[in-house]
Image 1 (tube, rainbow, N blue to C red):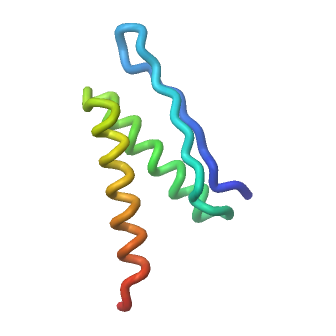
Image 2: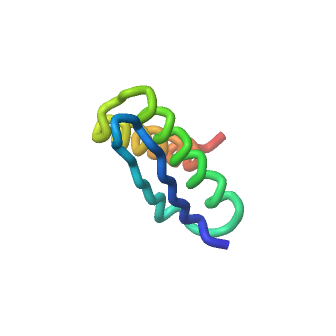
Image 3: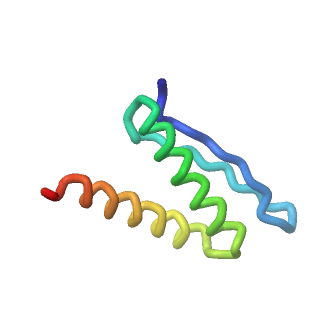
Length: 73
């Protein structure tokens, strides 16, 4: 099962966003994380956030989650 996902969303005023989430790995967990990342991105874009800032924000959240998984419990 691929962990890649894609999304299209209308942002208003005839503007559309097309996003691809790649590099999450494979399997159900990767698919869920990929889908969640795109869902968050859609919400940020629909709220009016600048595209570059929205993408950087989602990437930052993903990096923090990745670091948290690597830390000893």
